[in-house]
Length: 191
Image (cartoon, rainbow, N blue to C red; front, side):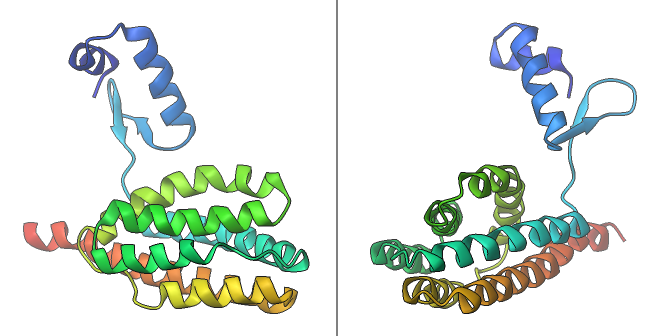
């Protein structure tokens, strides 16, 4: 797509489109296209695994810090998450999952964790949307969230960090595996 095409479709001048495309390029959502314009960045399983490595480290740190503070996460948030998981509404499932993790970042008392995680979550939301639109969410996700919340409330610093690590590893392995299958489907169809 070109900035001219986007500006014409949105009925705006080229300048805000240029600025938006520059931000999207900087954040890795679009790449320069051969010749002219940009392409939406393709989903990539290896890149997703790397995102989860960073997210896992941030989640573990946040869980340990929140546990040191013995923060009690809102139990309604967990109930809502379970309800959203059963609903099958992809956007709602992703929103509930992100809400849980943001609550831990905030409970940590370190605002840099949430700030650092935001860009990664923007990419992960995109991947989660692609995967969850073709497959179901893992059934254990909210059990893992509950265990993390319980460890945080109990002040079990090391256990909270370990549970957050395992949760990120499970999520990464599951999502990367499913993404690889989703990405492989078009190739098989063309064969």
